Image (cartoon, rainbow, N blue to C red):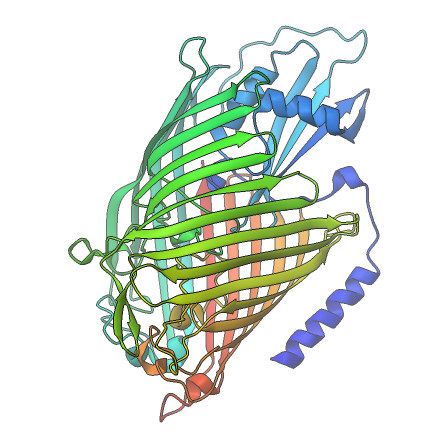
Amino acid sequence: MKNLYITLIFTWLLVLAYTPTYGQIDQIFGVEVVPNNVEGIPIRSVVILLEKDGKEYLADSLEMQAFYDAFNIKPGSIFRQFSVDLAISVFLKQEEIKSASYKVYTPEISGPVVLVIRSSFWSEGEKKEKESKKDLPFPTLIETERSKLTLILNGAAGIYHDQNAFFSKGAEFTQGNTVANNPAGRGPRFWGETFLEPGIAGMTQLGKSKIYPYGAVTFLVSGRNSSDIYSEGTAGKGTVERLYGGVLLPQLGKNKQLHIDLSAGRQFFQLNDGFLFSRFSGSANAGERGSVYLNSRTAFQMTAWAKVHWKKFNFSAYYVEPQELFKDRQSDTRYLGGGVSYNDNKHLDLALHYITINSSKATYATPEGRIPLEGLQTINPKVWVNNIAGTGIFIKSEYAFQRNRNADMVANGWYLGGGIVKQAWKKSPSLYYRFAFMQGDDPETTRFERFDILQGGGLGNWIQGINFKKILGDGNLLTHRIEMKAFLAKNMDLSFDYFILMADSKSNLGSLAPIATLQDKNFGQEFTTTYRYFFKRNYLFLGLFSWAKPGKAISSSFESNVYDWFTFQASTFMFF
């Protein structure tokens, strides 16, 4: 596997060496996505492109500030489609503005988004014509400069093939898992999944005030047509997915630089790129929900979220409760947290968060017995530096220190990654390396030291090996990751990921039963290819192939042979 990846890297570098450049304004910011698909995701950066007299240029600092004041949308805040839609409507009322629109891009599948706003001015002598009434595009029902009401219609269908799932040891790895009534083993397992999510969402201005209430409700039906890697037969489930309300209070204060967003209910939640909290970890999807690979449900059961934006700073406080699978076996794990972040929209993206588990029935398994999750405290600083000295080089790092006020527990987790992206080159190629450390427990001490990644995850970021993730989790884990990526078009990207996975400690209590005690620290390697293609704007094809090769930590845990685990996944999504 190493030889395969070295060959790919060498080929990749040759391609980069001979690719021509193109204009900076035509650079690729990521794959363009439907705004509805990234609701609640952090905004990494805002790019404003201005057109005047037939020429397009990047806004300078003064123009950027003027646009910020008009749009109320800044890096570091949370993307809400209605906020941007209404800001565009208001901005278009200015006499000198001929047109204004925006697009949303994701450099990573589950990471923060890039918001690109384009605006053009009337040329000298050009007369502003009175706009005729236009038909509203589907699914918009009502749209004015003060209000918007729209239908939501999301869905997907996918086919999946796993070969030698769980390294052919499905029965052993799923011991005690009540969902796993027919776990896959050696050989193939093929099935299909689908979901449909209709709903409605809206936002309006109360009179002439600066108060904008908003909300959304959706209902999601999901199912599979045959046995997946855990469960037997067909399954289907219909439940409420999104059900939340909030209020936006923009342009407050003497200089109109204070913006407040308050919301509560069943909604999406993510911190940074998902290291500790990912939108895609908000809900369970296995068993009767029949969506173990489509991962259709992502709304947390309850999220109360207060966000305050002032200049380049963001302040937040949140209460988060994940949605669990079984109503009669709830752990009732609830998180309280808050933080402050700074983003200059150029190079620096800094943050500091504090998170605590304020209630939970769940416990950690330790050599001395069990200790509670309740009382776990996490301090999480973040430092991301982008485009250092204009070279395209970037660095990303987070650290998480954990202690438990109700038990003798201290743990550490962190990552440090760096790479280069050449946006001015053809295909906007990038190369990224990351080392991640999630501490394991030392059985020679009485203190428990296994790291808890809380609700981390997300394809393309913190699913560290899409196959290995299903058996390892993220505690007691050291990973090396190399990623190569290129944007084949503005709506298409292709990436190759290579993971080397090791244990920090041979004591692996808290993991699945067969690997609770390790004979070796080498879990193995995984190679993943991911292809993402948005077509006809509202449709996404996601293709994925992953090959996981077990190391001695896995093979030595069984008396019989283990086998390489392959997965082939093809999914088509729609977002309206």
